[in-house]
Each structure stands twice: as structure tokens, then as C-alpha cells.
Image (tube, rainbow, N blue to C red; front, top):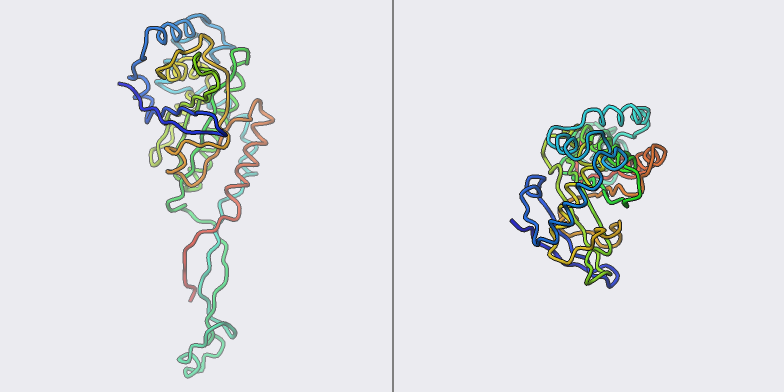
Length: 302
């Protein structure tokens, strides 16, 4: 099975995007050429059991097991490191205009006047703020940029995964519908068209499905997921893949329409490198999304 490739433009540069609707679809994808299969095989088997490469002991086989069954040790480490932030995350607020009655307002209710109820004879509207239990249709995509260079330690991706897991958990508890995407953006992948950017997205958790923290952490916080599964994904492009699999890039002005058209808000986890930047990112993004949201719903207070 071959995935479809979508073409876009970013500041005059060609962007090729390939989207996998599930990890299963990626696992079943066929590599287009013997060259691609050789590049992937060399990338996976050249590093043996280096923890700094894979993110955990046991090498590629241990990573495959964690992706299949979850990574609870990674979840615990991330939760312990970030638990102090829970009390700092604002609850999602809504503002809506509601009809109110009183001694002043915009419209006179003559029936109230005849009834002698002058304190409630005028009708008007006012803003009310509340903490809703449901976010009724609000969709948020947490997109994790999984690209790091061969020289960078696996710990960088651990903290990006920790942020993704934490944000997805908080948003789900606040009633949002959350999607989680693994993203790999690469420059210089095609030896024949070096300037082109190639972008892979893999849907790790679709909207409406139950959040599995163990699975989320394995697929976003283990560098082995990048250096195995996502390397396979990038090799699915039918181009002359460079031996080094290109260099890490990032999404900037161009967002794949397969993502942008199906979400209300996207959180792009890319700048995180350590615990400190993870905390800063969480506080900034949660404040941006969860404070002072306006929902266009009308209510009546009697």
C-alpha cells in the first residue's frame, strides 16, 4: 500500500506532504525502491543499543515493544517532572451573552408593568463567564515535531513527548476533543531536489478516541519512534532519498490542509528541548488556549 502525496508551496519552496491515518497504516506501507529499503535498514541497524540514540535500553526491539504496548516508565517520569504545573493551568472559560431582567434595560415588557413587577420589567443582555464541563465540538490538535539531528540526544524528544502527553491529558479533562499527530519535517531529503521540504504526519490519536498516556508517550517521547517508524515514513517518498535522510526542518507558514481543515486550534510542539522549556511551553500554550474563550451560545436567566 502506498500513501498519497500532497503538494503545497511555502514561500516559493515546494512542500511534499504524506499523511498516515494511523500507525497501522504506516506499518503496512510499502517502501517504493530497493534504495529506500537499504537506507532505512542501515539507519535502524547501525546504532545497535545506544540509549542516547533510541531513548531506552534494548535498542530497536525494545522500542518496537514500547510502541506496541506503551511506555509506562516514560509516563511516570514525565508526570513526576511536570506535576507541579497542574495547579497553574487555568480552567477553560466561556463567555456568553444571556438575557436578563431588571429595573433597567433595552426593552420594556409591558406585561410585567401591568403586573406591578417594575423591578423585572426591563429586558436586556449581559456577559456571563463560566467554567463549562464540556467544550461542545471544540477540537484541538497537538502536533509534535519529532525531527532532531543525528547528533542530538534522545532526551530532547522525551521532553517534547512529555509536553504532548501533559497537554493532551489536561485538554481532555477540560472537555476538549483532542487529536495527536506525530510530525516529521525534513529539508534536503531528495538528492535531486535539495530545496524541497518533505513533511510526514501520522495520526497517533484521532478525535473522539480514548487517550492512552502510555501509547502517547511511546510514540512522541521515544527517539526510537522517530529513528525507526518515522524514518520508514520519510523513506516512503518516491524520490532519491539521501543517505542522511535530510536535516530537521519545521512547519512555518504552510500547514497541511489535511490538518488545518479539521481542527479549531493547533498546538505545535517544536521548540521544547529540556524540562525548563517544557514548563514554559505548557504555561504559555495553556494560557493562550484556555483563558477567556468566547462561545457563541445564547442562554436565558430568569
